[in-house]
Image 1 (tube, rainbow, N blue to C red):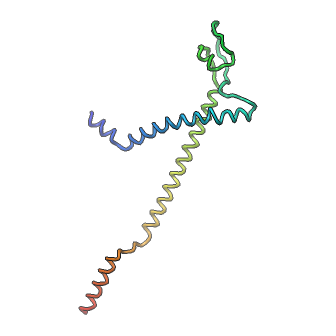
Image 2: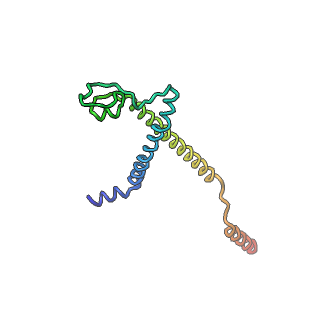
Image 3: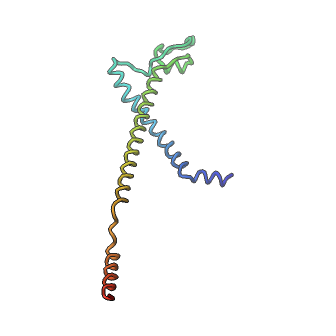
Length: 150
């Protein structure tokens, strides 16, 4: 079983997948920061100061010992109040759209590069290959020797 595991790990696909997961995790943090710190404040400003992350519906009672703000989503959630956080969902949906669009751009670029590479490969295969100078010289010598024999 250990040999099978080593063979499995040694495959290129597994290593590629591991690298992709690590890069994806780092990329996810970048996209989350982009959404939370750049895009959502701009969207909020455009729509009149909306902060989507604090939009929620309270689904249950507030504990009697709660002393925080009734509009603070994070504090209410920490206090155990059942909440429907649709603002956080909108933020995550924007994150998803950004990641999906970037992945689309990457796949599109790779597909275009692959297509160009295949076209160049086909053109190179169709062109006649010029023979090396030493082969041409040997061929001339051979032809000259044949001409002298005749």
